[in-house]
Image (cartoon, rainbow, N blue to C red; front, side, top):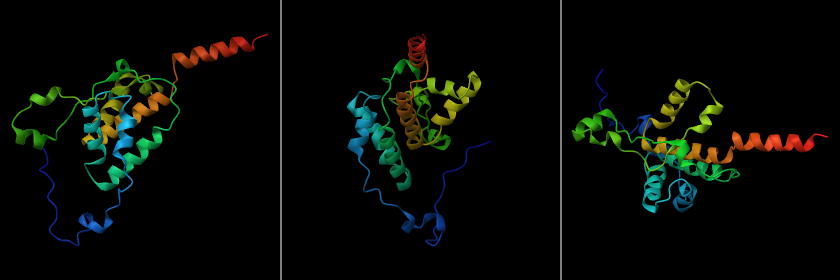
Length: 180
């Protein structure tokens, strides 16, 4: 099945989907604060600036504002463990098929974002490898703004949820200390 052609806006200004008065304010968006949010996961300043541009400078205003609000709030969760790049999968940059065809090349198939998807949390939701791969695919498909918001949110949640070996060892130590 051939890819869908790019969306063409309606010329009718009364068309509900394209009325400008529905636009929301994003005056509260704080790119510097978001650079601090992603710093633990993306050490290079230029890479952080790129991610923040994708998150709050591109796409519809309501998405830009929602990304700012959700990411800054998630950053306030307690930090129970440090980011572990070895527990992350590369996140591929994907262009829509019609844009790939326009460029006439497919050499960027190996291009990835400068932040990885922390996949260890997915094991909390499923023991099945195929299901976890499907979850990761859902989180990493779509426009860059959505993909990067998903990855940063999961990274912040991963940092806050320290379930696994550390908690199991702590629980064993507590149980042993409570025994007579």
